Length: 279
Length: 279
Image (cartoon, rainbow over all chains, first blue to last red; front, side, top):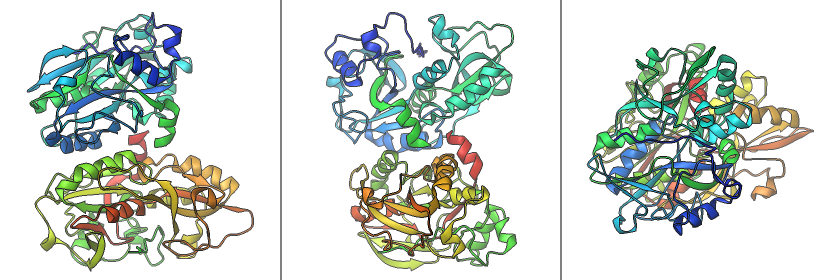
């Protein structure tokens, strides 16, 4: 499985009405089948989340995995067992229908892509929602930091590293990072800005020499598109939401359902409220 | 149960050697029975934690409760099921012996206070460690903000509020807050300073009018000692680690073991690393 996860937050072609729509309206339109693409750039100012739905007997260990690895796995909401709702993230959410697309994994392998999962639902399912990079990218751009992959309408470059996550039960594996090229001046500002968003991976985990975290060839990402560097730019690396997907794949659960890449859960949580909640 | 939880971080009589001892040395001396009092002021610069040990079948819901209430319940470490170790907080930790005192609750009632719990250990126990206020009090004092309860060697004033926690399974109840009187100038600085420590309750949840959060008489705390106010001071309120104790009491688990008030788990985590980890 090589998810082509998009981190674009200003996808071209997002109508102005969707950029400023309420999260509940976006979810209602997805639920009605009127919207099915990437959610990047929609309901700006609201936290979007990676989703992993797991059988109940794996929930306690996945909780541990997230607690032990908060940078790649910032937990922003967890359902009650068997409950398709997520009332802490939005009163009307039904996780069986409110994503623009679902990936179904069995024993760690992607077996199916779907538009809804009502008929797969199990009474013991637990839904985990993890913050994603859309929030901090929005904040970076609002402060005038330009993001090349967005300007070029590409998927951010992502890499396996030699940074090991702290294992929990069957969940383990290396940390995956996303990379954005910046001038050193912007990199310093980006540390400050993204540090305000621990729910969206927080500060970078590394900047500069890729080999220091086990990346041999910066021009060949493991996921996403290659990124053009310009003179004076250094790579800046953030923990990435693909990390828990690798951990889940390693755990080989009988079933696991995730969002399709780039088709996130749009929550009611204001990005800046989330920043304030944790700081 | 009315725990007399101390928040003093500079307990008089703490020998200089203990203030600057390594966390592992403090734990070894507690384990050997050479130390048994409050841990306030020991191994300065390292995160100390509230401890709750619960039967395995309650662990998943207690995880949810902490995730949904990060201000009063900042999770800093969780054991594997049945494992008395906490390797993410210190390689040598044995939670059965490394606290200066234990409270044993059965069906929500305090039934026993003990020096160790080896003979009570169950194969399904899960240990939860939550950050405590010692870390942020240390930081406040380092920046020159004086804390009256510490200067007067009293226990910080704590109050029930009308702020409801977000329930999870059997865990629910009102938020408990601790209160420190400050000038408005210091209160503003305290917001900034404590905001760097989300693992230690983070920013205040309220300041000023006590009635706004349901406190009728500021001179009569529900736990701890009353606090003297001086002219120009306002009360500043932080979420408090007694909150999860109230939630656990409401859940009436067949057994729950906590630290004795003020006798925290001394971890290896540097306070400023913990601040950085989350920001």
